Image (cartoon, rainbow, N blue to C red; front, side, top):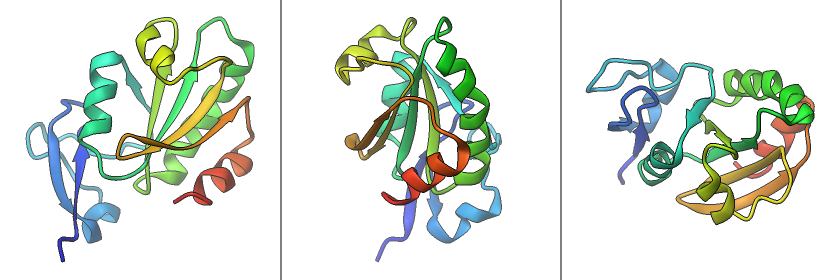
Length: 144
């Protein structure tokens, strides 16, 4: 049985094959040597978002937000804290809906902030509105 996972590097977007048992051991990118998990959400544009989704075997938690959105600003530090708590179980990605309108349209984002959990390109769950850290972790872990 193959116990390796493909993980896209947040620094250079290279695809890395990592044994599942090594995920907890601070793996580094084979190309650029950056940490594959840094306890920080990845800020994605349209191109990098598609590459992360296509080349990452773990679930991807996406925060759809905009600069002008008050609840989004309130949610930002909570999402960063969630990255520290949820990696390497899932990859956390932020998508600015003003800068990546094509992604927001593709996923029919109607309100922000919207959190979406995707696995292998398929939507698993969606939640609109800001959450506190414990609620966010509980919501995500029920799907992991």
